[in-house]
Amino acid sequence: MGDMTLDSVRLALVHDWLNQVGGAENVLEELVDLFPGRPIYTSIYAADRMPPAYRSWPIRTSFMQHLPGIAAHHQPYLPLYPLAFARTDLSGYDLVLSNKSGFCHGVRTAGASRRAIHVCYCLTPTRFLWLYRQYREREQIGAGVNLALQPLLALLRRWDWAAAQRVDHFIAISTEVQKRIRAIYGRESVVIHPPVDTDYFTPDPATRVGDYYLIVSRLIPYKRLDLAVAAFARLPRERLLIVGEGRDLAALQAQAGANVTFLGWQPRARIRELLRGCKAFLFPGLEDFGIAPVEAMAVGRPVIAYAGGGALDTVVPGVTGELFREPTAASLLEVLQDFDPRAYDPAACRAQAERFSRHSFRARLTGYLRQVLAGPVPAARAQRPVSMDG
Image (tube, rainbow, N blue to C red; front, side, top):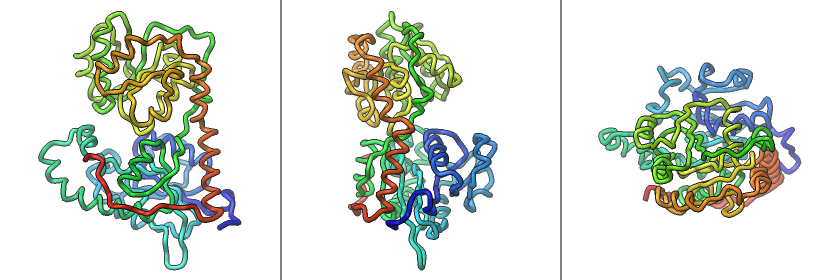
C-alpha cells in the first residue's frame, strides 16, 4: 500500500456503541471531522440520544440495533457484542480505524481475497473484562450477579484477547493504557493522546483568580471526590466548588463541610469561566487520560492530581501543578496545605496544554497512519493475557 494516501485510501471507522455521549464519542467526533464521509460501523445507534449532527453521518449498525430496550439499557446485552462485531466484515477496506473501549476491535478485516490494515485507537482494554473489580464497584454489581458473571467473563476474556491479536497496530491514549495493552494483550503500541479543545479553553487576562478550588466531574465512586471533600474538612478557610451530577451526590453532601459547594450541572461556557477563576483544578481519581485537567491548564490554571494514570502524562510537578502520591485524603491535604497558586506561570500551563490540542492529535495520528500505509511497521505479538485486577 506504499502508493496510497489518506485521501485516497478506503477507510472505515469502528465504534462500540452510540447511545450515550462521553470521552469516546469526543474522539469519534474528531475522527469523523478528520475523515469526513467515511462509514462508521457500530453495534447500535440511538439517534434521539445523540447530538443532531450525528444524523448526517453514514452510520451502519449491527443486528443488535433491533433488540428490545437496548438504547436505554445496553449493558445487559454485553455477551452479544463480540458476535455483532465478529459478523462485521470490513475486509473490503484498505484501512480500518477502531475507536475501542469495548469489543469493536473484533471486526473482521481478513477475507478470502482481501485484507484491511486494522489500527486500533485503544481508549482502554475492555474494562468490564480486565479491570472487573474496578468496574464492579463503579456499576455497583451485587454478589449474586457477580457470581453468575464469572463463567461469562472467562469466556469473553478469551475472545477479547484473541480479537486483540488480529489487530495490526495499537495506539494507546496514555502511557498508563500503553502499559495495560502490553500486560493484557501482550502487544506494543504508540501513544497518541486524545484531542483537547484548546481553541475553546483559552486564558482570559481580564479574569481575576478567585478564592476557590474547582472540580468538574461525574459524582461517582471511582472519581474519588470523597478524598477532596475529606481534605477540605481539614481546611475550613479554603473553598471547594464541585460541578457535576451523579449517584454519589447525597453521600458527598453528607460528608462535606460548609466550605464545599455543589453546583450541579453547568453549561460549557460557565465551566470555562469557573476554570479561569480557580486557584487550582483538583483531579483526585485515577483516569486513563483525563481531559478536564488539560482544559484547566489550557486556560492557564494549575492542577493538583493523583499521581497515576493519565495525569502522569499531562501534569508537570512544580511547573503546571502538583501530584499527590497516595490515593488518600491525607496525601491530598499535604499538597493543599503547601500549595501557592501564584507559583505556577499561566503561560507554562497553557504551553503544556497545547501539546494535547486537536491540531497535535491530528498531526500525530495522520502521520502514524501514513507510516502504516507506507510499509511494514513492527507489531509485537502476544504473551499470555493478564488480568489487571491481580
